[in-house]
Image (tube, rainbow, N blue to C red):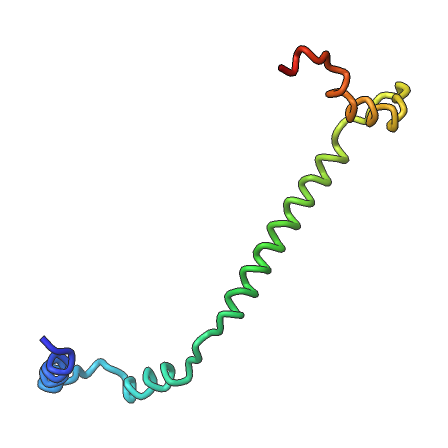
Amino acid sequence: MKLSDLQTKLIGSARGIEPKSDVPYAFEKRIMHRLAARHPESIWVWWGASLWRGAVACLAVTLVCAAWAFQSPKPSAEPVADLAQQLQSTVFASMNQPAEDEW
């Protein structure tokens, strides 16, 4: 069935029904005015709302991590080895392996 035929039949059957007395005056005009006044939202509105939700989520994660960092126990006062020496030993660790282990 074609869409125009269906629309014609539905409108014809709707016109045959008497309006009820409990329908407010000018109800149809108010509804049509609201539909006409409604503007379609832009994709940028959705994009902006998503970014704000993401910003709120990131702020929440940041606050939780900050609270966790402040509540964690402080490191002991033991002397820490030189950072440069630790980095050098980490970088050159693979070079200190025996040659027969590589094959």
